[in-house]
Every structure is written in structure tokens, then in C-alpha cells.
Length: 112
Image (cartoon, rainbow, N blue to C red; front, side, top):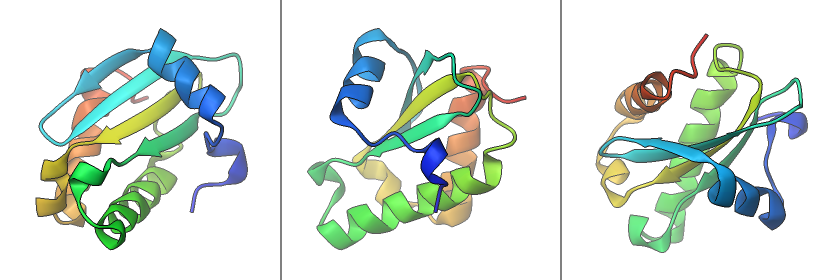
């Protein structure tokens, strides 16, 4: 689980990232990000009902949270991030999801 300081939780925060942010994507994920004045990165997840039933959406979010919990020190801390999943992500295992996350962060030049 991500620390509370590293989470985006409010609808207003997500809306700001959607409205003012830039994006990077691949086949499985879209990353939206916006600069912030905070010293800690804040991360949110959006998994639509197109992805599947509730247990599958929750599993996907748990896997993404765990991946980013371990990568929190390697991403640029001056941004708020929202990871938006695509339905194709359900076909991947943990390692492939991690590769997709690294790929989308690399495309956006957000890794240290």
C-alpha cells in the first residue's frame, strides 16, 4: 500500500490532473502527470468498468499500487500522477505490468 502522503484521493485532485496534465501511453496504460510544488510524488489510479468485474479491477489496482510502492524512490517527486488502465492490462501478469509502468514512465522522461 502506498503511504497516505503519496496518494491522490480527492475528485478535485484527479480533475486537476485530467484538465492540466500531460500524458504518455502504451498499449496497457495511460499516464497523466502534472507538476506540483510538493516534495513527494502523489499517485492515483483509474480503472474503468471496461476492465472487468470488481475483483479484477481491484486486483489490477493492488498490483499497480505494489509496483509503484517499490518504485516511489525512482520517479520524479515533483509531479502528481494518475495511471489510467486499459482493458488489455487484465491479460498481463505482475512482471509484464511492471514493464508497462516502467515503459510509460520512461516515455514521459519521469524516471530518475
